[in-house]
Length: 261
Image (cartoon, rainbow, N blue to C red; front, side, top):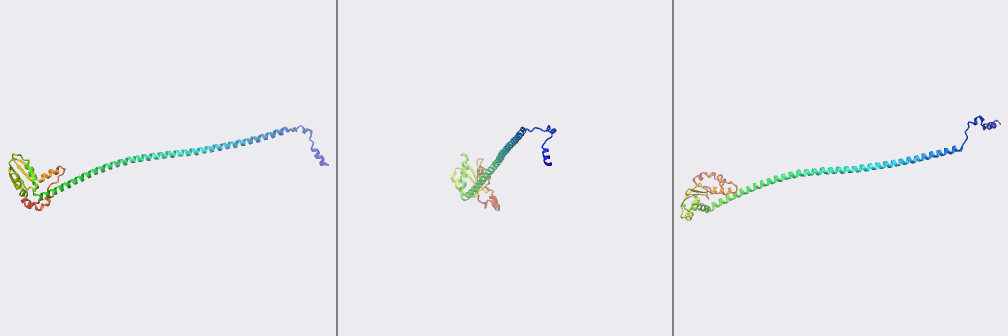
């Protein structure tokens, strides 16, 4: 059986090859297993270490990101607060400056208004005073025209200013006043030598008294100007009389048709 012999023959190792064989030792198998086990443990430990490092790195990154977010939020809030404070400061300064300018303008306006009010009050007072003088003039005119004895107090005052030793007195009156007062004066001053002269150039209600070189000007125009001059006025007694009587100028020269003052 050739095949059987061939198999049998292949189980034998020639002598010359025996020296080349290495003795089998189960220790090598144990060491290899231990090495593989150690390597497996090292890989496992390395994996755990890598996993721990990855976890720590993730924690670190998350903490850094959280810190960055918190820092950004805090910085944003701080910047926002600073910006608001700066804006509020600028607004307050602007308002204060505008308020100061407005106060100055308001003060100037009030001063101007006060000056204008004072001027208006002065103008109003002046107008009222002028109106009062005009009314007084009209009242006096009516009094003189309606009361023939209105001149008598003036004559008494003028004659009372003369020296006691004066015996001769010259009195010039408007003709109409002379007609009314002649008898009254002669009766009241019997010890005086009165010379009563009509003077058409005088306004009714006026007179001129002369005695011993003394002249007392009692003309109505002069008395009027002295009275209103104390009030700072200069309204003439006959300012409007001349215009109204312009048509009767010819009669005025002859003493006829003169308009009563």
